[in-house]
Length: 418
Image 1 (tube, helix red, strand yellow):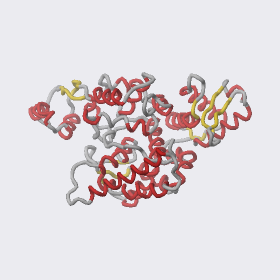
Image 2 (tube, helix red, strand yellow):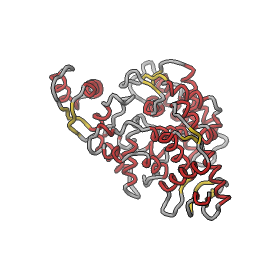
Image 3 (cartoon, one colour):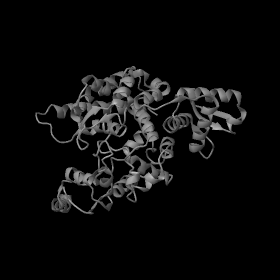
Image 4 (tube, helix red, strand yellow):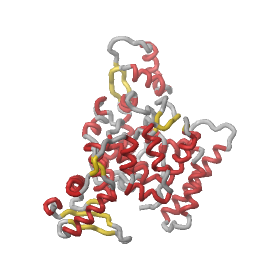
């Protein structure tokens, strides 16, 4: 596991976080898979044609987004009907288009295309939701699936607008936010600090122009501390990407979509899903901070870059409470332990072990989003240590070579002894 918080191989293609739910469900169905199977499977499922009722929202979406020659017959049908169509009409579209047309979505971009099937699973391996190579489900992926109703997975197969998988529920939103900060915080911290200072409307191109300097600063900061070959390679990739963006930016006319847009879009669009960025035009790439986003990013960006780990452990849920306005009651002792134990039972391995971070995170997300109960990951860890000291036969830890607690195993319910 790298200590550099920069997503590897970010791709503009994976804009909507909801696609991740389907890929994880496929990864959970087998012990091993392949990039081709997952990538092609996601595209084929998302592009399957369905007949759905034509609504004003779908009409607008189709007119705005389905514009190339592939949709010639569809465009003719829309022209025949006109924007003031009357009566019950149906339209045959890809199932992803039917969901992306939902006006409840803050952003309606990001449909998948067959040519890019190879790129789509990258976000899941970079986020350690799937294991690279075997594409099997990792515990963080299992944690997300625990927060995903089966109806949202089935909605990829059978159109169900009431279970639109691109809409995120509150637990999913919190988990995704934590995950993006954990895996990409070294980029997001300076990026959003700079965007906050601009204090207005910004677009993907302007934000993307900030990346070369950010990447070079990260490379400089980690250069002397990097020892593993993987991390050295990641720093080289940052330098190469910075060079590519700057080389394109130096052209007199920079049009189309290139390295700049591919690299910045997954650092903007997901935060529309999370309610931290607003888009006046859901089909465009112009953004403003939502009220929640201004609160959250201001809190996150006031820390020093070196303190991201501390923020995630000690301040993440408080920042989420302030941003999203959750009504909360602090929970501790037996009440907190019962939620940790329930989370543990949801993700433990067949041998009875579960990663402490995922246990505490799953418990914290559920407690806050579903019950209005608040605690930080550091509070949960402190309680587990206390319980282990009092009940060493019932609670066991695994420790890595750095002396850090990594896994927990409950031999018996810890609640019986309290």
